[in-house]
Image (tube, rainbow, N blue to C red; front, side, top):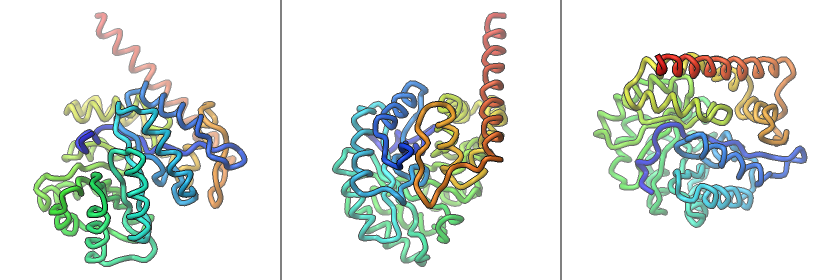
Length: 309
């Protein structure tokens, strides 16, 4: 599958776990089938939202195999393979390739805070270790490391570095990246709340947390934006705004996993150092889900009424 298939609403899928903390592959398969039904455009497996930092190498491979088998080529599967070690990132990327994924998402090395030259050499080495398309992931507030547009432009000369998940929250970066990289990159937002603005400014989609909870609604919003129907996209995003905020009320994926458990989609498991959603925030998440679902029910009814008229 071409890397160009990574557009629209791409879910950064959670990793379901039993209360004991054991990975629940059955629930994982069920979530993927739900996303296929809902029209989700792609899946990122064991990214940040998938608790990659606490998964074993064997668990990561199991998740990728289930994802690739369940999707069966219908939508692209991207593996999160980044780490703070270039050698480990190469090893994880090669392992992911052996599972049949379509691309890898490689976060900037965290904690050790490399220079821009170090970032260039890191991504170049990872890309040259595989034939898979590589997407960089820039999220400075988590990593303490910012992949600058000029560095990304230099990486444009590496054939299989094809895109970036840009999570700085600065949509103006799209212009800078496109200008320097000559419109070569697939640009994906890492922030649900600004996904519409991101697409309107030249982006191609979002790697979404919110899509875990309301996949069909996120897909509709992104599809509207990509079709330049920004009136509809903005209207849908406004209805999603409360849920976007609620799912970031505590460290991701704490609220999202709690919400999916509340909806009966997964068990309650989450791994330390992450903990269960605090009691005062639970009602906030429930209200956000209920309001979002009610808003979209009202919108659908209005649309049908107008069509009938």
